[in-house]
Length: 229
Image 1: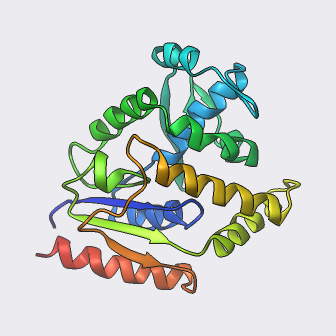
Image 2 (image 1 turned 135 degrees about the vertical axis):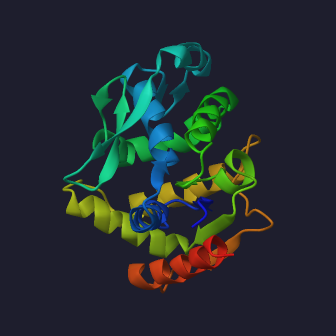
């Protein structure tokens, strides 16, 4: 069958990564979590004191970009690739609420986006890839054969994220998570460089009331239709 590029965009905490992993595993495709790449640079900025609640040294971060090395390594026990920052596994560290609170600000920086988009496009040059993020179908792969845009109500997404963080033992409140979701939505949709928008040829899926199984089945059917054309 023909290999295609599958671009999955959408708001935070809509389950983009879960769906992308399912599709990639089923199809034998490469999966790339672009959000992890932005989170890794955010973690780097936090570790080096470039960003805090009331401070952001954007210039120093931009000057440091050449020294930031990102790569994924497949973990056979987990069944997916983990994020490495300068050869250190940071998969757990990048998933905290603290990183979530700064990642949209980091993603606003044009130089950061340029660096990562270039890497992402190189990863997908041979197709057979599933990539999720905010601008995959509009900027990274505007010619992707299948574009999915995922959405759900802020309250639904906040509850999912809250449950996920609670399961990991993180001490957060639902109100704190909801505020983070709403703030990220605003920044993602209002930034000047590559704002979160629905590509004209994307298929929108509101999964507020869908199970993971129902969502996967629907998107897999769409995928098969395109691959077998």
